[in-house]
Image 1 (cartoon, helix red, strand yellow):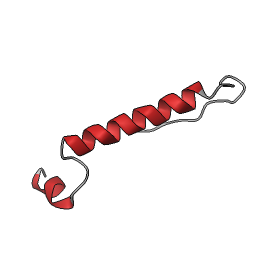
Image 2 (cartoon, rainbow, N blue to C red):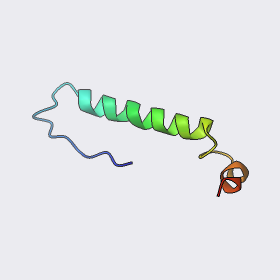
Image 3 (cartoon, rainbow, N blue to C red):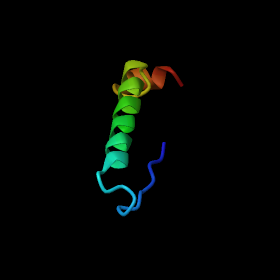
Image 4 (cartoon, helix red, strand yellow):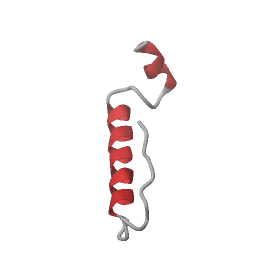
Length: 47
């Protein structure tokens, strides 16, 4: 996943930056719950 920059002139309230942080947090949380991220033993078993 990649998050790109937004021009401050178009995002004066930092809404896009806050949304990007929320998306990254949700993705990382989902990966931990699904066993794709976290304890190395669980991740390596799925490969």
